[in-house]
Length: 393
Ligand SMILES: [Zn+2]
Image (cartoon, rainbow, N blue to C red; front, side, top):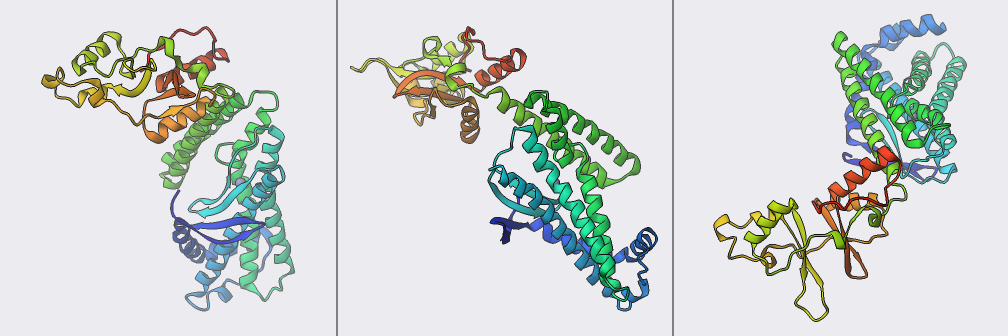
């Protein structure tokens, strides 16, 4: 996420402003100011506002001041919308890190997402409900404001319309819109959560494609950008949830290549011999085991193809594995869950982790182990206990 700073807190939830928001606020103020006449027309015809547009344009800057107040009001509405989500989530015991205002509105950062469909439904729908209430409230205040206060009536009438539009827009059934979550919650009533996510994501992608096509036909860059944004969000939400659901209760021990199936090398092996073995066995990573000590076998390192390749081909006979191997070993315990292994590999930007229990090497888990297991889980619904030994690649 981009740079943001805190402006205060409500109900113990920090409210933050993203720097992109500071760009968009004057832009909104300007756009509302420029369009003050057509908007007054709309308000006058739709709710009989009786606003005198001349009173709002007596000074050149007056429309922009009204625009700025309306823009601030709009973002207050967005904060209230996000508070609706946040307070409902808090009621179910989900901690809220912050509410951030940025380019495209607001984000309530939930540290985790509920998987109970009722909770998700209530959290997702609370935002649009708040927006509708804010819209109705603005309309009520609009009715109470004397006719002579043209500026106030303009801002209140404008906020009444836009908060209702905001609620409607958010109910589009596509992630990351609230409507996408509502759809998933409704699907999850009688479908497993991961499958409901995939279905909701498909609807979201379809929506994004239609919106993108519409944008192209209309040469509307905003629609194209929004379509792209929705498409990416739907895909990543689906992938994350599917992966998490697939690996629920799957431990590293379940999917690692156990030590007995591992191919290992000794530290004294020459780099030339190692590369020859990699070629014939089609493995690109070997734990290095020292068998010369008194304690029997001892894990001393890990050697990969890229380590071996650092030696010039003509010198590979003269170098040993010990000289090129990695000794800064990244390990994981067999009880850790598979998602943790993926995260740790990603974090260190490495392809494999040694599985260590009480200091003993009991296996190795690689990215391809994880992907193979993921494939199996998706196709069969569980990790087969009688699986074939896999390569350490
Ligand atoms: Zn929302």
